[in-house]
Structure formats: structure tokens, C-alpha cells
Length: 111
Length: 496
Image (tube, rainbow over all chains, first blue to last red; front, side, top):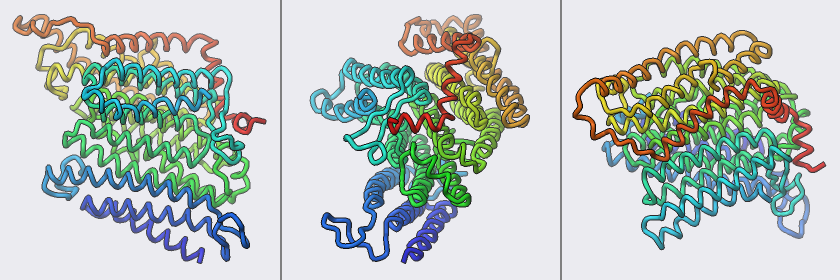
């Protein structure tokens, strides 16, 4: 279970990084960012998992999973959402100006 | 208590501005000024606390190993002084330029000030990430705040690379949490010493790559020239003067605390990045015709000098790096503000075009020349002193290569700054000898920004002379000693 979580996180992270590097469409760049973020969050959530653990709510029945990574994840989700929203706002504005979301056709983003 | 205020005061200002906007459509300039003074006072109080009697304050009454701790010590204090001076200068310039109109701009501005203080003070790794993201989002918005399409492109580029950096940093933080189960920066050095070497390599790669992306060091510097050159003048000055120094602080703090005693070649990587930044930044700056882009590439190179100093991994090297960070703030803010003023008068940013126009103020050119001489490194000025010290300590600590790069970089920078200064001086000469029709530009009004840049020019000279004064040298050395004193930091945070 843990191995599955970590290995899928690695695959998703690499997919996201590749998407940002290789794709020329700005919306795909944002999708790549979002994928990278999701994979990092997956790593954090998985790190709090204990096989056979119970939810960390007051009367513990057995070993509780670590709630701290969940708090981190919630914070990081909020931060990531604001990043993505801002990126999309920029892209919408640029798209209105240039009529395209292709990196090669937007002068300042080339290279 | 004063440490919390340093974060809370600007944050409160940032949230009060939209409320005040409901009352006044255009904010009164004095109101924003008072807010700026309040946050400046809070930051300076924290800086003084850190310098005179280093202190830690626990948030929410939690013990230091569980809760978040804010710490001000002798490494954070000079950076705090630097950023608060940068923020105040940039605020004065923006108020002079835009008045109280753009309330969104000021709200983001104070948010940025609060998050910078947060990064400098926090002793919790995840908290550092959160402050870093507030800082970054505010910076993306400020870059794009002129809403021109160049600024928007630069903001988007900054956002994509900055977010990638943040994700690498978060990944490193996650690995640290998995390996040790703690995020307190004072407890981590000991906990990381039992972590396997391979794990430590992965952690250090993630953290250093993330912070390098945020700093704008050479191999990953792509966003910096665009962002710094397409923003408005006060924002460019703030970005080059203060923002990159905050990232440098985070890099110094984290690499000293986690990897100084645990090894892992982090400091060698920082030195290599520094050397590449020096050479690459100067060579790229040499090819620019746009004056603001030239200054932005020069910033990349100057970050390289600071990184070489940090890469020494010794108290003396880090002290020299901090000295250069302060000097670079003075010089680069001055250069950006004066050149922004000149470009606005002339109506172009191309160096070749400035050469052919008259109408540049002689006072501006004189001040610009002082800053250019300082940043190239002409002996009595501060740029020479800090470069000299970095060169001296890097020879003893990291070998000859960085010192040679610094020397080569100085020659290249002398070449391109000479080009700019000669264009400006030529333009002044042409005006004084040439057509009398341009006399309407001769309005010798004293603006606040020219007073500030004049003061900075005097400070450049004073800082250069002060570096020769032994008490000053020993107090700078104490900054470096604080940076490498891991036990001292643990004692301070944990209150033992």
C-alpha cells in the first residue's frame, strides 16, 4: 500500500515535470504544475499512513495515523490553488491579447 | 513579542487597506505613509532585538519542539534591516509616483513585506514554505501589476518557475519530515546526522534546487531578467534589492543548519552555482541594450558573488556575503531608481537611443555614476570592499577558481557599465553645449526618490570606508559566526 502510494507519486511527478518542459501550450503547463503539486501532496499524505491505523479522533481505538501530514496537505492545497488560479488568470489575459496560448507565438515566453 | 509584531503589523496594514478603500476611493498618501512607518518600526525593532539580544518567541504558548517559533539572531538581523530599508525606499518611490490610487498595489505590497519578515524570522520548515508562497504570490502580482502584456508574460514565467521551485522545496520538506518526523529547524541538525547519506543527498538536492529556482542563480535564472526588467521602477528596485536577498537568506540558513556538519557537498554546489552566475550574468548583461535588462542580468551576477561567499562555508565567507548583500541592496536599488527616472524623462530604455537624446538631469547622471563605480568595484566604494573580502576568503576556503571568476566578472562589468555611463554623460554634455530649446526640462525640483538615491550614494562611500574600521569588521564577523553556530541556534530556539 505504501509502495503503491510512493511509486505512483514518482510517476505523477515525472509526468508533471515532462508536461511543463515538453508541451508548448500554456494550459498544459498549468496542468503540469497541478500534477506536480498533486504528487508532492500524495507523498506527504502517504507518509502519515500507518498500516492498520485508525482515524486520529479523540478516543483512540488502536494505533492512530499521523494527523500532522494531513494538516500540511490542507495548507499546501490552498497555496497550490491560489498559484494555479493566478496562472490561469495570467493566461486568460495573455490569450485575449495574442489570441493564442502557444508559448512559441508569445514573444516574451520563448526560450 | 516584538518579533510577532514584525509579521503582524504589515499583515494588518495589508488587510486594512481594502477596508480604507471603502471609505476613500483614493487612499490618502499620509495614511499609507503611516502604515509604512509602522511596519518599518516593527521590522527595525525585530532587527535590533536580533542584533542586541537574540531572542525567540513561541507562538500560541506551545513548547518550542511542538509549536512554531519565531527567532531573531545576528544572521537574521542584518537581512531584516536590509529588507525593511528596501521596502521603505520602494514604498516612498511608489507613493511619489502613483499617489494613493492603486490600493490593490499597496495591499499586495504590505503582504510582501509581512511575508519577507516571516521568512527571516521563522524557525519552522513548513512555516518557511508557507511564508515563501505568500511572498512568491505577492511578488508575481507586483511584477504583473502594471498590467502591460510584457509584465504579464514576465509574471507568468516567474510564476511557473517559482511554483516549480516551491514544489521542489515542499518535496524536500516532505522527505525531511518522513526521515526524521520533525520540522523544527533547531532540532533538525541533530536529527539529520543519523539519516543515511543517500537520503540526505536527495533532501539536499530538492531543497537547494528549489531555493536556487527562487533565488535566480544562473542555470535556472530565466525568470529573473524578465521579471526585474518589465516591472515598474519601484517594484524592480524592490525585487533586485530586497527580494532576492530573502531567498539568499533562506539558502544560507538552511544549508548552514542542515548540511554544514552533515556534509553532502552542498556548499560546493553553491560555489559552482555562484561561479556560473558571475560569469553567465556578466556575459549576458554585456550583450544587453535595454538598460533595465542590463541591470537585471547584473543582479544575477551579483547574486553569484553572494553565493560564492556563502559557499566558503566559513564564518568569514558568510560575513563577506552578508556585507555584499547589504551593499548590493544599496547599489542596485539606487541604480534602478535613477535609471528608471532617466528612462522616463528620455522616453526610451535603449542605451543607444539615450546616447542620441538630450534632456537627462546631470544630478541623476552623477548619482548613477557613483552607483556604477561602486558596483564595478572602484576602491574606496563598498562594492570593492565586499568583492575583495569575498575573493580573499574564497581563495582560502574554496580554491582559486571562484576568485578568478570574480576578477574576470569585474572586468566584464567594468566594460558594460562604462558603456552606460558614457552614453549618459554624453547626453548631458550634448544638452549643455547644444540646442537651447530643451530648457523646459530644466526644472530642478528635489524629489523624494532623488534624496533617497543621494543618501544611498553617500552610504555606499561610508560602507566602503567602514569596512576598513576594525570594530565594524569584528561585528560583521559575528554575523558569520552566528550563521555557522548550530548549537547556538538550537540553544536560542529551544530556550536552554
